[in-house]
Image 1: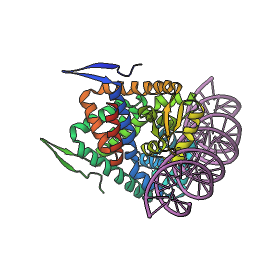
Image 2: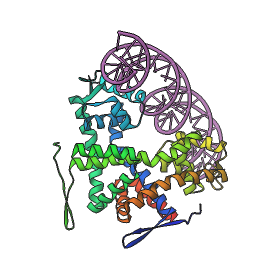
Image 3: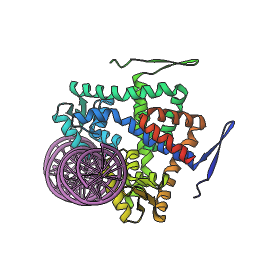
Image 4: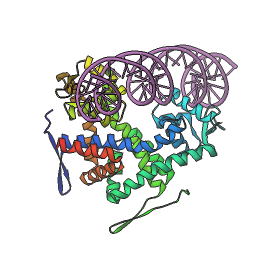
Length: 170
Length: 170
DNA sequence: TTGGAATGTCAACAAGGCTGACATAAACTG
DNA sequence: CAGTTTATGTCAGCCTTGTTGACATTCCAA
């Protein structure tokens, strides 16, 4: 309860004291960094009358072409109604193609069209540019630590999704 | 453009190759981790009919008691109208107190009430618990890297805000 | 003292979450 | 084969939290 509470951690040779203040700084860093993280794509999307939800859908369809709607909404952590609204506009705008499943005809498999891939490229170029600059500024050891802490912060279910995607892409 | 594009960075003794794939993994890690980061407070807020916006306001008012509305909306990066709606409910629910400025009567200075501090404590306890677990799992060197990369990812304006808050709290 | 700048409030709208209800088609099961 | 479950889509309606526009108050400087 008290603000000065500390927790000691044995970390090999070091002893790390995690005060509430240090944790709070981490929390605030996450908040401000996430704003920066989304800022560049957000600007691009604004001009196209799309939002972050469209970006997320496009990102993961590009990442896992042929994924089903169900798969995608688990990944994104939203309801099918929410996702459907976004997909409908992307399909009718010709950025995403929905193909009925070959084995299971209930399923819809999602693919980016050329136009969709083009937008994906534009968005991820912008986002990667910031990421690259940050990685560069921080250096490789910091980057390794960054990734380790982020993974530790995920819910176990998301961590599994993340791992699966890593294997796919590598 | 090609997926195999790499950028070499001279990092002391090492040579780090930042492929698009590595950057994309960082992007996805940010996405999944942020979900985890907000999940615990979100659950608490749901029961109280508050949202993330209320949490953010409460957090920063606690962090900088007596801050003005203008100050706060710069920190949060939203419009004054958006913030005002949140503040109105917090004030009428007796979590936040708004005092008219002594020197400049246009300004409102914001403070948490006892009740407000109580909720802040509950929310930040939950968020810190996850942070603490993640830090613990990752180890102190990873934590340092984590913080470094996050700072490098912020817009310069946010980085200044972040620095200012760090000095205040320490 | 008057006009502009700063600050905050109210109203209305849009995006994108959510739930509930329901339709369809396909797959599975007894 | 009949009945149930699963995957998907759609409609309606709600909430939160962004946005702009209009406006009141206060301060300050010409």
